[in-house]
Amino acid sequence: MSPTISQIKDWLDAEVLTGSEALERSISMAHSADLMSDVLAFSHSDSILLTGLSNPQVVRTAEVAGILGVVFVRGKRPAQVVVELAEEYGLPLMVTNLSMFDAVGLLFARGLRGWSLVEPGSAA
Image (cartoon, rainbow, N blue to C red):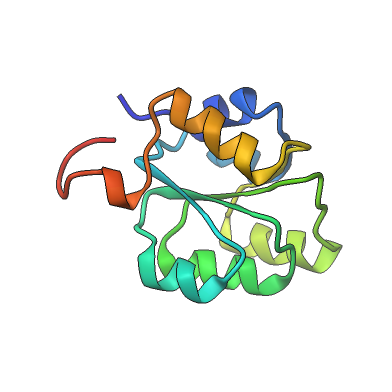
């Protein structure tokens, strides 16, 4: 069974910045990147993105790629303009104090996988 954004929030001890109405969305896989070109090249819809980049391009990239939520790692807090853009798109944004390595490791330990470990057409 795929976890929800709410479960991921709890696992990462994350703070929700916007999109609390969408926390029950199911997530099929996770991605972590600071290069938005990698997100566009390798991400899948119905996934969550973990990143240390906190500019508006993250939200725009998530919208184009069909990403269902973004977690900013290392306590990075996006500017208000980024939060407002995410609100326009209905995109949940969260902040965790964990490093990207630790956050991804916790999600992996809970059974969430990335694109290279998920069989096409199978549930994560």
